Length: 153
Image 1: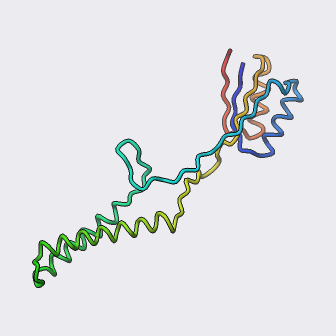
Image 2: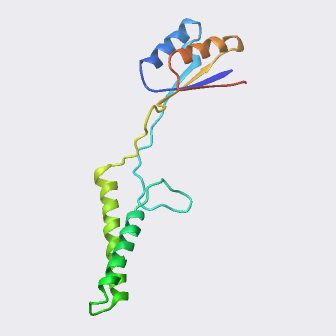
């Protein structure tokens, strides 16, 4: 059987490997594979198939609507009229809202795709017999494994 478990890179991983060796599992039957976590900046514009929940459109739409109403109202006394000033207000409000969102997104939050909470950094694979499975699982869970799975040969 093969048992897979995931760990943070910590002393608990080393303690788990030592405990496995103490119960008779040789080093050749233990494989520890470090994972590379994704460090990718979020995209500014979402696509139809991939969205991350961050929108640069919301504030622009709200401020654009407000500015278009103000521009349309003030446009009755200005030379070009309410329609042109409403469109100018909508465009300038949308651009202002987009710039505000962009500033918050890039400067204030500095979103470098941080994973919150505990994340897997190492996958531990153990080849063992069916009689050793319960002991191995107990050791892995006892040493704070993030997840454990077993696969029969």
